[in-house]
Amino acid sequence: MADPEHNEPQVDSVTGYKTTGHEWDGLTELNQPLPRWWLWIFYATILWSIGYWIVYPAWPLVFSATNGFLGWNSRTAVDQEIAELQDSRGPMVDRLTNTEIAAIRDDPQLLDFTLAYGRAAFQENCAPCHGAGGGGAKGYPNLIDDAWLWGGSFDDIAHTITFGIRNDSPDSRFGDMPAFGRDGILTPTEIRDVSEYTRSLGGLAVPASADLAAGAQIYADNCAACHGDAGEGDQELGAPSVQDAIWLYGSDSEDVIATVTNARNSSMPAWGERLDPTSVKALTFYVHNLGGGE
Image 1 (cartoon, one colour):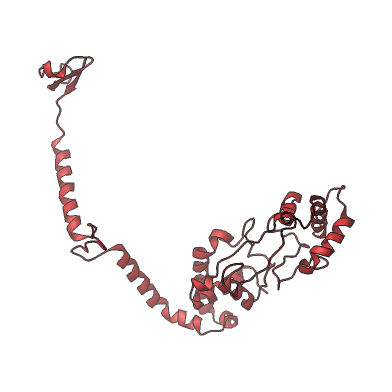
Image 2 (image 1 turned 90 degrees about the horizontal axis):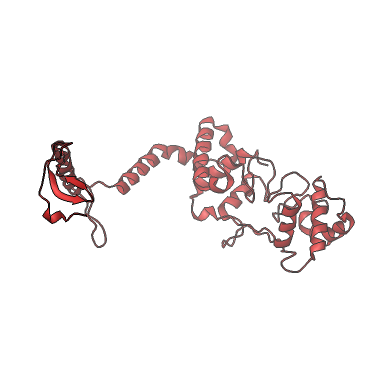
């Protein structure tokens, strides 16, 4: 490699530009300045940034930031938009607040508003678990069918939304299924037998090797108190029916065995601690409407 310090600037024979005198392994560096138009744009952006610093919040302070000449920031803009929205829909919110939930259908205008209000609350708070359309997923209840773990009346749904399920709220819904395998209540063979018997109550095909008679006895001794003698379930306890085709955690043998072995005591937040009563009412009506509530 040539020593750049001993090379003199020359004119490149191909481009016609002078070189800087730097050469590396036979490659010379052209002394080609940036275009004037590019430099002016660059300088303009510097001036623009200075103006931005002056007009808008830009510089952090110890506990806040500079307000800018216009006094505008995105947080106050959002607050203003929310206030405007609340003012615009205030009369309808008042009507919703002061109308019995069962009477909402008698007012077409209020009905449309409540469904829109409830849909917005659902998409923001409930859809991540129950799905955008309320169809649920494995481990998250489907809200568009007619099966309700804790009841599907307006009061039942409102209570579930307000206080949630298996959380720290003293009024939370709470049903506790034992972990029959993990806690050593049943042996693996007994768990397999009772799982297949439970699946048979739902009309599912079971292996010929399953001992349904033994499973029936185990079910009567350990499961019937909550799920019912015939597997009809109990909404007071949040115990699902096993007679239908709705299996929250799956109906395959492996899924049911896993449920009996380890239990499936999932939880739901107490939305009454986060949402105002009118939002809970709209959400209750919307969810009730999704599943053709009881």
